[in-house]
Length: 310
Image: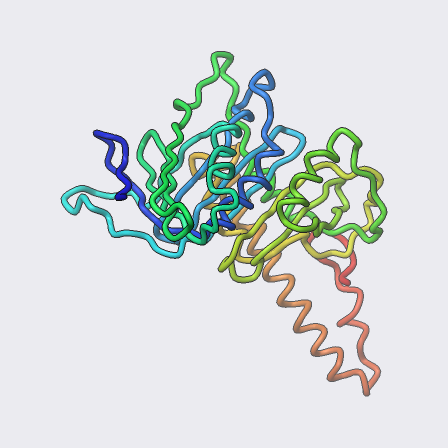
């Protein structure tokens, strides 16, 4: 059985991913989808296929929480229309129930890999090597986002990016609101646990997976954490290669505030990276000069957020 895309629709991105990565990503992200009445497109899950960087991203938010999943693509086919300028990134919106169909169809089939064919209107997943090889499920995307009240779309990637830059709180004690526990439990079930940190500004960050390489499934999600102290460790909640991936996912390429805000985001990441390097160098200098008793300048350095270095 040879899978085909919908009649009249040419696949703009065709790739292969690990089935368990995609299903876990869907299960981890969809609990954080909002409701249509809340506005801002929070009832949609953004699915962005990046052929150049060989990854598929899923983004969801409900204003209280936001989650981003990065799924590595094992193979990406070359563009078929050689006479046309090809965009290597394709983004579509889907409902959470539509995406969950994929997890249900390929549940307990022994599927290791899925072929994904993305058109301007659909996402098609095909079993490559499971018990039901050739089985195909096609889900249809939502129409282009439009709000009759003129509300801008809520950017889940920007929300996660901001929390990644927040400093980790010194005290680990905090409270997760009861009405948010069910969503976090669903994410924990999908990931096999819930590794998280709390920030000094009252947020939690779940960071799971291949955080240092992005070679495997990577999840970053955030929500409210009550009771954290303003005292911080002076280091960001997360600083790794997923930062650039999040920047690539910003809606229209810019966070709220336009190009100056995007430049500020880049400057913030650069500042964080520079500060971490200086702290590493300071620590090495401290160890070298400890015998002479001159360690005052290497310790107690202030981080980019005004906190003391750990």
